[in-house]
Amino acid sequence: MKRNSPEYKIWILHRNEKNLKRRTRKKKAKKAALTRAIQYNTKAKAAPNYNVKEKRVEFNAPLNFSFIDNPEETVQFFNGIIRFITNSQNFGKRIYIDISRITNLTIDALMYLLAIVNNMNENFRNKFSFSGNEPSSPEICKLFKESGFYSFVKRIGNTPLSQNADTVQIVSGNNSNPEVPKQLIDFIISKTDLTKKDLKFLHVIMVELMANTHKHAYNNSVLLPSWYCFAEYKKEENKVAFTFMDTGEGIPSTVRKNFSEKLDILKLKGESKYVISALNGDFRTSTAMHYRGQGLPKVRKFCSDEKISDFRIITNKADVRCLPQDYRSSDMELPLRGTLFYWTINLEKLKGE
Image 1 (tube, helix red, strand yellow):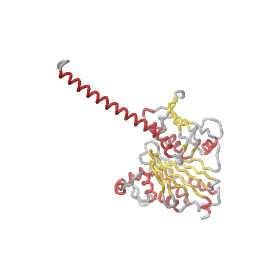
Image 2: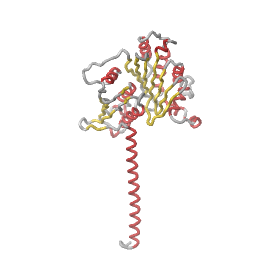
Image 3: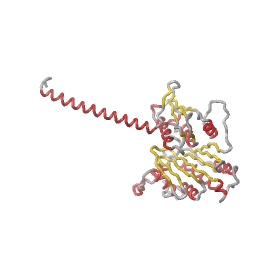
Image 4: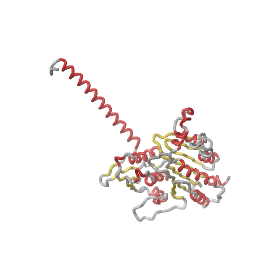
């Protein structure tokens, strides 16, 4: 083909058209990828900052650092950390958790932070070093120190750690521990004239929740199955509030695995429906044993009988509040890996029964 022949000019024209289409496709793909990245980082709200001077990656906790009060942002924050940890390109980097600016704190967020630091799978545990700071707010820092957080991590400094007779500091384990419900019951008895018989239901709740952590270990690849528990006596309200964090497989995941053959028939939409079904005792467990899968219905009955109040479960994308005869539920955008249980006991009401 001659260089200036009509055939050559037609060939050049076709080649340029193909190249233009190719460049246009690449530009569109690049723009779409950039848009997805921006949307992803906006949702995550936990994009880390690299501190060049300190040579570390810093994660800033949300100002309202609480699963109970601010589940969406708190889940997004921890998912950002887990996503960073599971990326092999980040192995060997130093991670710094900045909670200095938080304006609200509940113990559930500290429990999950402890789970990441202490209960990470061995595949990731030795690849990172963690450090952090304390809340700058004196009131929040007091709660932080009284939580028992420093019983699990090293602290730099000589300031004596404070304790509070109105709290049972964070305790942890990976299986049933009969001393924990005993400790909680003794704690409540010390605040009122209730008896062990009055609080027998609390023993049942704790045994069930601790046992479920081990039963629902399954395939969580980041956090090893463990539980954390905290109790606080609210003197002005005459209540005791309990927080229990289970880092095993979340309830919707285990229900979905065990009953996948039924889901198309039931046409359940949203993960909250799985949690409600489990609370109602609608499903059997994967073991097909009649006595399994009864733990959550037992706890649900204590809520119906109003022995416990404000009962709430946050797990995977599900956020379920149990009322005495009904539920309020919603689904979050991002999943919590594990299960958070929260409830209160009205001591005055229990005393009158």
